[in-house]
Image 1 (spheres, rainbow, N blue to C red):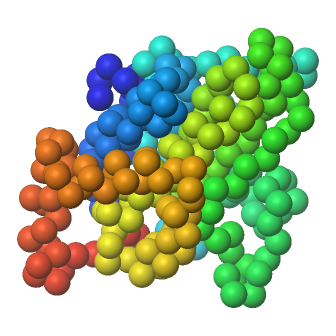
Image 2 (cartoon, rainbow, N blue to C red; image 1 turned 90 degrees about the horizontal axis):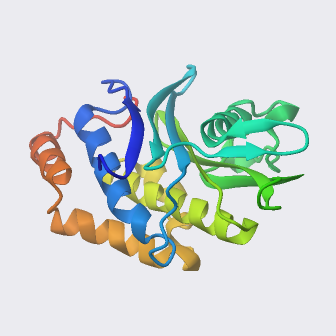
Length: 241
C-alpha cells in the first residue's frame, strides 16, 4: 500500500468509519487499482472519500494520491490538480439541490428528493492542453440508513474513454467494498445492487468479493477479527449510527 499511495491522510471516527474499516478499504483499493484496466495502472491521480450523516455536514475520511503523486490538469481557462478536481467533483454533489450541483439529476418522489446511490459524471467540454481529453467531474454517492458516503477518483490517461472507464471501475470497486463491510445496512445493499452488476466492472467486483472471502490481506484479517464479535453479539452499529 505504501508504494501505491502517497500523501495519505485518514480520519477515523466512531460516527463514520473506524480505523479497522478504513484500513480494509485502503488495502483492498491498493489491490484492485493495479488490475483495474488491463493491468495498466495509472500512477498519477487522487482519491477522496467523505462521509455525511443525515442532517449534518460532510467530513473527509480518506484522501490519497497515486504513487507518482497528483496530476496537473491544464486547460485554456484554468489549472487544477487531480486532488482539486476530486474536491470540486464531491462539492458539486454536496450542493444538490442547488443548481451548481452540475450532475443531471432531478428530485424523485421514491427517493424523497435525495440523490440515489449512483456514479454521477459530467464531461465539461473543457479540453486539457496536454492530451486533448475532456475534463470530467465524477462522484460516487452511496446512501446508507443514517447517512451517505461520497467519493471521487480522478486520474488522467490519454483519452476520455479510458479515463472514464478507469474511474468508474475504481468507484464500483469501492461500492462493493462497502457492501462487504456493511452487509447489515439494508439501504446500502438495496440501492447499490444494480451498480455492482455493471457489465464493464464484473472483474473488479469479483476481485473484491474474492479478497473478502479469502481474507488473506492483513488489514482484512484485522477487520474481520474486530467486526465478527460485534456481529455475532448483535451489537454491531450501522454506519453513522
